[in-house]
Length: 117
Length: 110
Image (cartoon, rainbow over all chains, first blue to last red; front, side):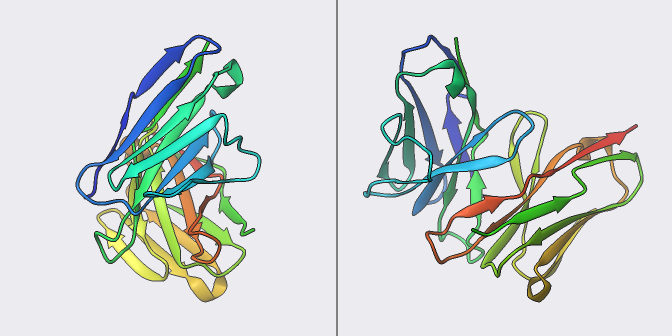
């Protein structure tokens, strides 16, 4: 099946620094990529949707200046958490949707666990 | 927006038992997927099933789109089935957003 990778898998940073998370679709072209956030023992909350070459669409309540999303190519999207604070600590998951298969399925990356000290 | 409700929220099974997980959704959808999130956080796609019935080994799923629900059946459960099972739906109007249910947390005892 299709593979989506994320890097890094785990990151610890100091408060006030910025962290970049990469999401790559390895064997298909992702027309759309999604970024989710998951708190412990909670469901996935959609943060933003990005289409290649255009600006991301953010969900209500998500600060677009804090969570910068770039979808520069059909296989790469990045999420940058700017001036991170402890409350930004969370599990961030990306997913990619492409028309590689008729089923039009979303494939998820393995997630990035961010801890802000 | 569309609401997705999963039941039960928590489930404990003895190894070998069967179970049924339910997903109700409040509006018509273009896509429905079942996922298993393992203890390491990885989401595994189980089924893409906007309607009908599919089977994959010990797992099967049925979606009755007209009645707005989907069921995930797990037969002869194994300890490796433990984790959280999410139902996620998408409507193609409004930006292809996929909305997740709260999940069913399953623990299979040896």
